[in-house]
Length: 471
Ligand code: AMP
Ligand code: MG
Image 1 (spheres, rainbow, N blue to C red):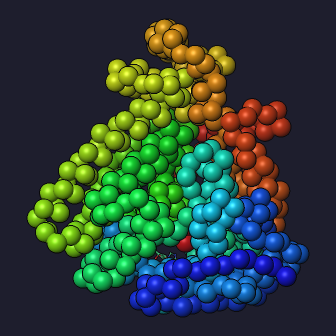
Image 2 (cartoon, protein in one colour; image 1 turned 45 degrees about the horizontal axis):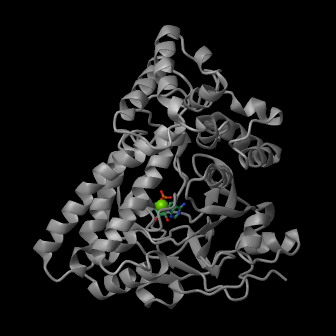
């Protein structure tokens, strides 16, 4: 028997926080992947594949689960939507993991809920496998993220532009509390609910916070650090709506996400992001916009509105400098600089300008600095050599710059064209590329002969220019 040691605190909150909702059964569940290491962390004992498929496709609700769809609101591309909620996901429940942290176990693509609006509540195989691979890669890269516990086929088609194979992802998160969850209660003027959510969030994620100001500062720092890490590995989330912004500071809701290849700060992949609101470099600004929305939602928790607005404005403004500092330390580390000075921003910026002008692959360009292969990637050899001299002088005083660099410059990232090829193979019934990508990306900082092919950027004819939403 599958045993999951559930303890479901969110389901004990007031009824208006969620809707009770069982996953909707599917025709023919089959297991694609089960993350045994993560399962052990969560205290889940794994039975045979058939039972895993039944549970993680939503056909069997395990003992102790209290399946709910969570209510939330959110700004989508700047437009406030007062009612979103889990339209295609259910939270089975929570477990306390080996290190004592409470973790959510959620099925995504598990059928309609009261929040589905016009959606079918389903996911197709492509986005499920993309989220599995990319979220696990992000974890291995050292970036805070939700995890993937399982992926199953449903044996049912979903209809997008064409019929596509359906799938369910089992996602594990520190929680699914979003900026949009605060916005839901605040915009409804449900201040009792807002206070309850505040208390719950503080208790679960920020036990030392004693005020809304503390919470805003703490979340802001986590988000700023998170985005700095995204930028440092060339990650573009693609849909940084406030409902996709987690209070825990984890990367959440992988939709049309993608990684930079040739460096260009204006890169946008998402087909729905026509104005580049969530482009690569824009992420550093938009996270502050999201934090301003959180601040606005928290205002009613304080007795004096004017004073609250003044304080929150200062806190959010201070995040600009925090963002610059987080960016500087993340990128300095990529150059082997352990204690960055303000003037290092120029050295980093000049390298990025060269990478942009020479269309250098972001990942291989940085990784190549340690092993002398970078030079060959720059058409402007003199430009690079001049920069390299400055850099080498700068790191003379560093104790072990190359060790630091090899921990911060991955050899492997999930490249967009490889993900697309992996998805096409899986649609045709071949899951081997999916499993291979997972194996390779579990050690993204190691150089391995076995995965040398995965280090190559896309040929022009393979390049992915647009990515589509995860629906
Ligand atoms: P996302 O873009 O995945 O962050 O989703 C935004 C909102 O749309 C959330 O409330 C989702 O639950 C909902 N949604 C996305 N896809 C579907 C779907 N296929 N069926 C129902 N709701 C969906
Ligand atoms: Mg979302």
